Length: 114
Length: 118
Image (cartoon, rainbow over all chains, first blue to last red):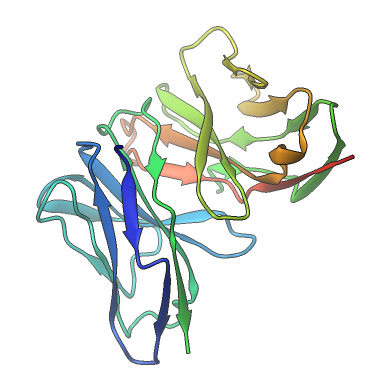
């Protein structure tokens, strides 16, 4: 079955550590996205990539980094510069950059700083 | 300015009744798409319905319909015959064509928590 796989489902980070969240899709979609969800704030865009080897900052990119070396993979690194990383992270993909294509989402990764 | 505004943080509805979840949007683009997603407590995002800016008819998908009023910039979701399984968070989202320089990222509202009661 085609879909988006995020791993791990739960992640715990110590203060000052970098952690990487995995996102893999087998839908052959061109575009991929990372969102952060905090209670009461909906989904906020961190980074997005419309093609391999290219990506753009979203609304809250500070403290995060991404890469897009393969079409099917878009990992997100939460760096120590991100002061409040505890949140629910969702990865999504769309077939292309068209404005009329819906996004498919992974199951999410819940990150907690301990 | 908020691109997507959902003014109802929480809603209650009785089983088998209809409910309307409000969504207003702001864009200068002529070409854009409006989407509704459902998020159960498990956290997954489920696509429900889509309305394009050029679509003259309101979109419908089973028990879901989208009340699209372009001049008012509103895209309300109507759920008919509510079921207990409809209890979830509902998000309105918009993607613009990006011709006015804003890019074509998918922007979400803050959501409405719907609770269906017996």
